[in-house]
Amino acid sequence: MKLLSVAIPCYNSQDYMANCIESLLKGGEDVEILVVNDGSKDRTAEIAEEYAAKYPTIVKAIHQENGGHGAAVNTGIRNASGLFFKVVDSDDWVKDEAYQAILEKLRELAGGGQTLDMFISNFVYEKEGERRKKVMRYRHVLPQEKLFGWDEVGHFHKGQYILMHSVIYRTKLLRECGLKLPEHTFYVDNIYVFEPLPYVRTMYYLDVNFYRYYIGRADQSVNEKVMIGRIDQQIKVNKLMVDYMAEKRKNLADKKMGKYMLSYLDIITTISSILLIRSGTEEALEKKKELLNYIKQKDRTLYRKLRYGLLGNCMNLPGRAGRWISVEGYKICQKFFGFN
Image (tube, rainbow, N blue to C red):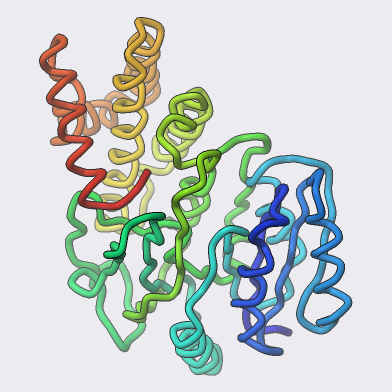
């Protein structure tokens, strides 16, 4: 069994996937690299096969009909033979020194007496044109140099949250929790990092800047104009997360976990709201009302917590002036957190 399986979802990734694969190859034989070609039309399949032929004990090329990012991640989970599982998008990469430190720690933890469910590290926004790189780190929230549970987790501030880029899950946990991401849908990385949380009992945080999250392509899914154009998919993901939270909320084993999940859902709902506001159309504002009504019908307690919390109030100030304040607040968040 491999120590770590890394899935690389690829769709028309010929121009940048080699950089991603090369960075992961430095993990050596402890790592299995699953290059999932999701129905690409360019040379992605050919490049994947070239790497699989050159590194047959490390790289596996998997080809499927186009199903979107979620389908590629699902395929990665199904085919993973590693004890732990990581997703690295094809336009991103990992930093070697941090990579080696993480592999060393995973080896140590794998041989210990306790089972590790989720490993967390920092990620860096590699935003095109910006010299100063924003780092998402957790050193003041999560204990270091020890396995810990939710009872030892500190307070996450708004905008500080654990993304797909931050986590390595135990592979068996992902299978046991029944995670299956929706196909032909963007922004499912939020579901990926959200739904397994009720099954996570043990965590480990290593304060290293491991994952390099590239932002800069005009067609990238996190480009703001692209997100507004795909707002229905953002809303779909938002609603699926609401459904899941409504189902699990009353039976969550740990209050701190529930509080964190609520905060994460609050952020996702805020993103949906602000994108609908920035769209500037009457149709978009109606969709914003419909989303809030959906949450209210699904779970009134959850609705009150989302609607009347800090972010919910900021996103629902009345009239044109209120929407202007919301947008200005969003611009500040953009500059501070480095996304979009």
